[in-house]
Length: 261
Image (cartoon, rainbow, N blue to C red; front, side, top):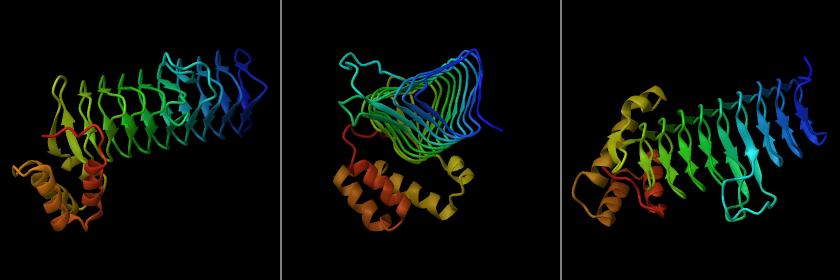
């Protein structure tokens, strides 16, 4: 199989296409841009310049990928969007390039499922294996780890972070960091509702590790200790477990604070 470009699409001459790329009808691809082997643009997809798309991505109709961002301070500077491999980007999703206020780049990792109407704003950083349900909205400079599940119509404030294996319920509005491994939900006043044990089991976490994370959560948020006391106790009792160490580091490094139970 070789690269296929539908005659009703427009592809700039400075676009680099890998092997077996398929570009369906009514797509517009502006260069300089790279599209990796096996990626499919189904139809009506707009790809902006300075965009790098990896291999075997599947991009659905009316997605807008790599156009300049919705930031009034942006004045056309050269910024980028970099997308990894095997992502699914569904209908009408918008993924924007970065700004010079960030590092000039928006990044999406590998194996993410980005559903209909999702908005990934400038300077966001996504890891791997995340699920963003319909119309989830990421404001600028949001960071999402790996294996997070972001519910439909949820909103994440600028500069907020979402930890690995976090579960964020639909319609949740987050103006602080979402704890890894936990279930977080709520519109006006979101709360953390403890460890997402079912989700962790599905991902292959052992019962021993799940119990350790649950114990750490109790120490941190369920024993009435102040932050310093709770962090010290959890670290001394459970800090040798990598998953708990990551949870504690996530809290220590928070600039906006974390959503608590």
